Length: 505
Image 1: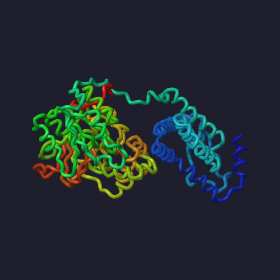
Image 2: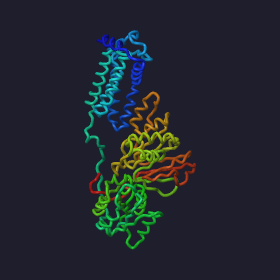
Image 3: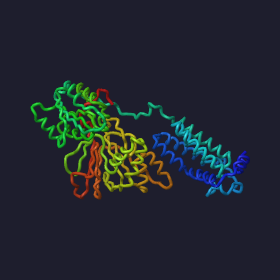
Image 4: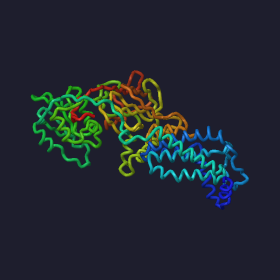
């Protein structure tokens, strides 16, 4: 049978262009390079589980085919004299013939990906079939070698699914620690005792209604102050506290930057904070389940709240600054700004890749000391609580009481721009796969860990920083005795009292 199939394939008259195409298809699959690229594409298109299962299936199938199949069965490959010269590979394989490792890897990856995403599998199936046929067209294998490789690849993928089944949708949710206990805060039914600042510039252009009519209707006795240019939060609160009827609660309608600024003042005066979502993203308000002005008012009137984790940011000198959500050093702020320019047009995954390429190309790595160790980095991300997904640029915080700082350090490795772009846009898992490619080999460039405190120092360049939507290219507070700029971030568990709905998260 093998002889008859080989004769029919070799007897077909094909042009030089066709022969070149199949040679290149076969070579592209050498050492799994084609499938690593496909895995990166799947991750970029929002199918990371398909990429991981495909690569896991490929790895096991390759071991079975090469370390077991070829040793147990083996056999001679087709003779070169029977293969047209224009079809022959540049390098003739010397390993035993059965089974076809290329086919086993191709079918394993496509089947594994299909078990997680049928759409991805349908797109990959013709590619895998093309790789399998290329081994016949180039005379690298007999037909039985290709059939055996396909059986091994599909069998491994199906066996892996039986051992490690795809999780059900409900199981995809991240397991969370026990829910936090709510605390009692002053219940202000009519708003008497609340001092609320409204930032009219936050979230401008998003079409949100003016919150003042609703505040006046539901909290008629609250003091509401609309911020104007030149207003200082601290001075306004100090003046309110010095009045005959000092507030028991201070509130803010604005974005994360405004909320963070008032949080520092709330901690200073030991007052609970009332947050109304009024910014562009409202990351903190979303994590606290405050999705509307009405929700925040309900929490104030019922007196429900929680003591949430925050972090304190300290420089070489000066008072600490409250960090509600995130702190970053390096290119991360520029990356987020660049990504937001494109994500509405092309979607967040592709926008992340475009933004990563642009900011890495025009930026140089930083030399910094992290906890005393000197490293070359692109960025450091610090989240108050765990953030998801596990990338250099995570998006979502799901709890306000994790009790940890989530740290992501994006190192500049041996191939700093290419590897930095991959890890920034696609995350540590994809970078770990890319690191296996011959031309990009090296350790993963994204390190992810949790801590309760972190110190970053730089004697070469001012790293700048950003936190809670506010960014600065200069690090304030002067320098240490050796001339280094310093940022120290420390977790403060339960450091801020915030109004939040009764339902715990």
